[in-house]
Length: 207
Length: 221
Ligand SMILES: [Zn+2]
Image 1 (cartoon, rainbow over the protein chains, first blue to last red):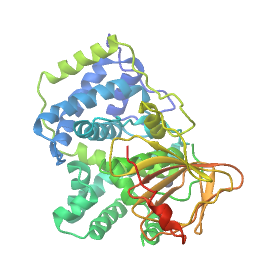
Image 2: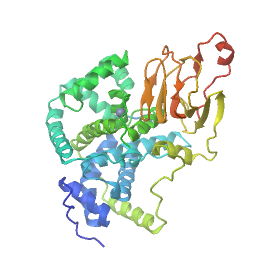
Image 3: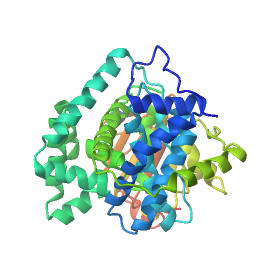
């Protein structure tokens, strides 16, 4: 059944290996491409699962999460838009949603799965410039993430990987909530994730 | 939709949304805002990139060798069955995160009169901290001046309203805290529908408000 992964349409400029494979899964249900994605991402998703410090999470759930995420990847791949994000970013959001879903399922009877499509389907006016900017920002991100001061890096890891809220992080590190927020802000500014102007109105907003 | 929203959730909320640590009720409101706001979708994408880089750079954990086979087995079973519906049908003209709540509810939310010019329809979310509801203010409708007993997130889904501080239109995201007293008014040119999440009832500021205050309560579903 495995069709050869087909080259991307000419309009699509993103061409990293994983994004190509994900497009192939979406367009032609390419099982060989899916197997490659599995080989690369399953261990990363497991590591993401293992990092969780959510209440109620236990090691037995780690490979359950890998399964859930990879099945979602297969089912939802057609909705992946390589112009919007890299495969890794898209799969991260699937993993994040699945991790929350598994936790909510444990604690709730009434439960609604989170879906990327809740907002991913919005048609943004993507332009080549935008895509270029994003690619550049992804590259810059890689460098700047490695250069963050320890105290900022630590907080980002707690929030993204361990799944701690800002409030929980502040409690755990014995820091005021304001300090946690401002360290996060500094980190985002340093990585040029958000421009300083955005913080300005936010500061007035928060008072 | 890419309307020109001017009121956005603060960055730390978007970051918590991106990391998946934002509580359910607030997430529903942020989701609804994202439906309207290209600016925040763009910020979110970059925040998601941070998460994805952290995941990508983490130490890969070998998985059980049988795992791939069991995933493929489940996929085959899924493919045999009826294909799952991928899109939510349009219950109303609401953002997907809201439509989903309405559809999942066995007892579809009903409008109930709150005051002369405001109707409310409570949404079932399964969490108990916030009441999540739709509010409908009729054209030109006045609401009583009130303070907030807790946090209140509001996203304008349709039309617009104003208070002493500003005018809020489609997509705008508003956070109110205790001490924020205001008197919202529906726009003259049509009804306004908002999504809101309240952690505590509002407190009426009028002289006779104390009578009504006893009747005001939140009912998280
Ligand atoms: Zn926004």
